[in-house]
Image 1 (cartoon, rainbow, N blue to C red):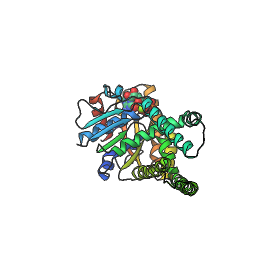
Image 2: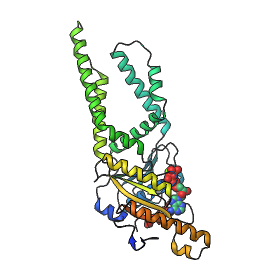
Image 3: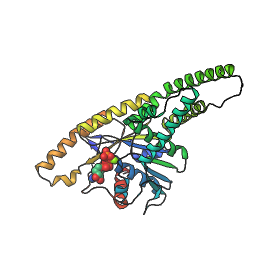
Image 4: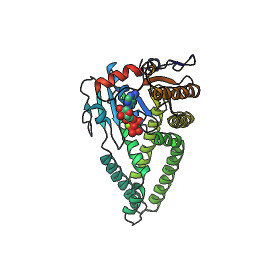
Amino acid sequence: MTTASIDGRALVTTSMADFAAQHPGLRYVFFGGKGGVGKTVMAGVEAVHLARSGKRVLLASTNPVHSLSGLLGQDVFGKHTAVEGIDNLWALEIDTRDAIERSKREIRQKIQWFLKFAEISTKADEFVEAATTNPAFEESAMFENMVDLMFADEYDVYVFDTAPTANARRLLGMSKVYGLWVEKMVKSRQEAQTLREALSFTKKKEEDPLMLYLVDFRKRIEHARELLTDPEKTAFFFVTLPEALPIAVIRRFIDWFTDFGIPVGGVVVNMVIDREQAAGGGEFVRNRVAMQDGYLGEIRDTFDGQVRAVVPLFDSDIRGVPMLTRAADALFA
Ligand SMILES: Nc1ncnc2c1ncn2[C@@H]1O[C@H](COP(=O)(O)OP(=O)(O)OP(=O)(O)O)[C@@H](O)[C@H]1O
Ligand SMILES: [Mg+2]
């Protein structure tokens, strides 16, 4: 480890390895943090480590800008692909365009059901357009994809490259509200249904696809919420650098997540300059080390007991299975 302690106080008290030992049933692992801090790399490292321990692991990315193929040096776009050189590890970059198109088709269908049921003779197109042309829609489609993977239940552990921070927070924060909302919707659909039956001459009972959908949707949300708030199954790790902005970002994330009862696995500090290596360096390196030391102190005080690992800054990018294995030894030191 590069920096075991700052001013004589340990930075890491419960390590990544300790945490893993305390959570043998962990199934959904996420890495969040500011852009460029090493989320993709840490997801890869975690996945490699878990696969080496004998679990069947899927490393998945729901990010429209994929980087797993680059990380692994292998094309994993659009299909579950066995990672070469590591048993038990599969990787997948979700085809986001396809996922978004599928979501649009589903929404169109629901809107058509609704218009038909309400006997409104308007074309669905305008509604569909309004419902699907915004960034939140794409984010939701990605989130739905992630939930589909989780529900498919084909692997022991899922490591997601993209922490859907805003969406997880929104979904979980809103799940109670959603629950109430769906409840209300179901009730008013039932009333409408009864009224229609009372008024109709045929008295024929109609299937209400929208209501079936709402009931199913409620179940789905509830199940996702159960999985994503279960501290035995789920952990969100936050990656930071010993720098001001990435620290501020994860501090905010951790506060949100804690408020919503989403399990925080801990903090990984990445790209810390090795002191021994730096000792022979010039003034520039000494200044950088001094700066990092200051922020490491801040990290220790802010995330007391939550820092799981300090990963050194390597002398090259982290790419390919051998390099990931090397970084895994640092993350799980
Ligand atoms: N400890 C490290 N030592 C050296 N290079 C690193 C280290 N960690 C990450 N990198 C490199 O830094 C770059 C950014 O890492 P990565 O792509 O994992 O960040 P990210 O948080 O996923 O970025 P984005 O927000 O764009 O998704 C990559 O080129 C990666 O190889
Ligand atoms: Mg990334």
